Amino acid sequence: MKPAQIFHQYIWIINTLRAYRKLTLEELNQKWINDSVADGNPLQRSSFNRHRDAILDMFGIIIECEPRTYKYYISNKEVLCDDSIERWLFSTLTVHGMLAESAAVKERLVLESAPAGEQYLDTIIRAIRTDHRLLMGYKKFEAEGYEKVVCPYALKLFRQRWYLLALNDENQMRIYALDRMTMIELMDETFEMPAEFSSQDYFSEYFGVLTNDTPMAHVILRAHKWMPNYLRTLPLHHSQRELESTPDYTDFSYDIRPTSDFIGELLRHSDGIEVLQPLELREKMRQIIVGILKRY
Image (cartoon, rainbow, N blue to C red):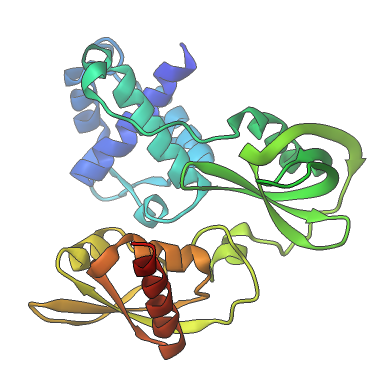
């Protein structure tokens, strides 16, 4: 069986259990046949158990059986709501499967451009997996190019660009955009990855990819017009909390380092968002807006 077909079956099982919550194997099998997942062939128990194991390994999704009812269900649905690579992979494969089945309407599907710098992903991921150092050619916008040896720690996708978080020879953690790399080479030399390092924790206090010494702040935003529902369905940050809601506005709080990435996101929503606190951030936003007005 082709890998694409196997992935399709994994995604079907996950989405079906998400939709119906709990199903016996017989119920799941009937839906499997009705949807022609395997050309009308039934879902055998042995195949289902192999798929359960693969789904756990690939996506971190646990499918358990209720002893009393013999119904299967996803016991850790929260894994489908976080920012993990498993969640991203599940989403990507789900979309890929739908697009593969929608070739007849491809002219009516409008997609964003593929992430830049993806030609280096294979080498970087191999280096991350094996703890090998990388020789990297890099050229910032409007600057001279250079070569640097780095220890790759993590990859992050942000706004259609891939970024590499790496430790350089000066023992500094730096972010490198893959679309500004001119070459990448896997070195024979390895490095010791700190056992306690977590990429999720590293970026947890930030929005985007810029990680600097901007102080932590308790930010309160007032969302006007359409923005409250937008923020409820797509939170800006995992620390988002809803404080107060009225017919005219809703206030949200965040514990975050307000870097330029975060400020840029607030500006992107124009008059839908107003910064209430801290006053330093409110004043900074005001100055930026005044500067923008001068250009017009």
